[in-house]
Image (cartoon, rainbow over all chains, first blue to last red; front, side, top):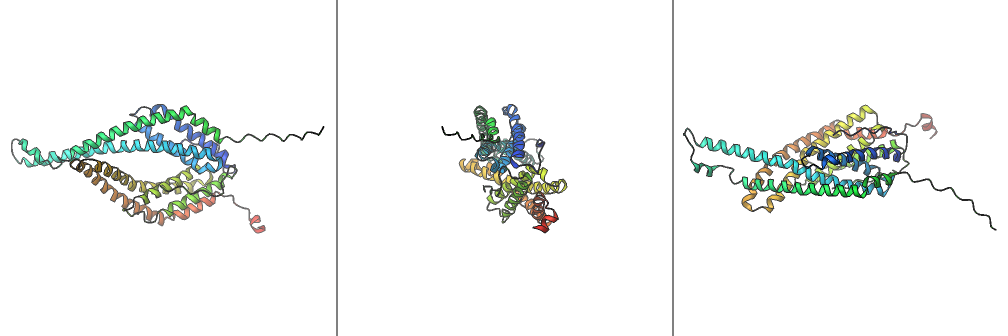
Length: 194
Length: 168
């Protein structure tokens, strides 16, 4: 996923001014994924949202000296979100690997048993005992079930945590934390003694 | 995971270009500091630390892109990405093997064989990833990536007029 371009950056102006623009764009980018990412089957969207979280986290980490604790706290929150989406992504990567591995083992077994028939007209059921991978399927099925279940549990957690962040007003909280401090009130002239 | 080193001298009114120079200097230093023994497959944390450092460097290069000369920035970023990809080729199987081993340990012995066979497949990829990483490190050395990063960082600082130099 290509990052959105941030307009108006200027090397000659202050860090906080530029950082505010970048954080604003990266935050909007992250939040834009939210409605679609609530669909568990949206694997690509969840992956893109993780990348967006990573981008926001790193810009907050780098620029936190300009903003203080608000930026660092937001960076930590974003890191937690990124990690959670990362765990979901790991399941999404591993599940097709398990299926592909089982498919390969099945093909290997089929090929081996077929070869064992030689030129015969049929194959005895006894041949199934000699499938070289027959003891591997059970563990791989258990692994697949575990990964599918873990993915579902993590996804539910993601939805809950994202909703909690939105309910807390995470974005507004961050934007307020990065806003320039209001100018100090002008000093009042000292009252003349009565 | 290694914590990011603080970038000295940064505050809200730091010139953006100076912040860019400082950030790239510190983050590049972290990448090369973590490169020692990174090919040692008995300690997978080394690759992880270098990968995280590379991600942080890449982030700094992207955040501050506007502060650097376009052409050299593009070249350096491309090389940093290539290094990050190579680290990923090693790290991804590392993580997969670790996870599969954890699951296999919790399964009855008879069921663990299948999971172990998948881990074995990842071990082959891990070896390939390590070779890829070795080549990427060599390329980074040969192309002087560390020095080019230092030059790129310096280019974000304002050029002082010759008269200032003479007066100084």
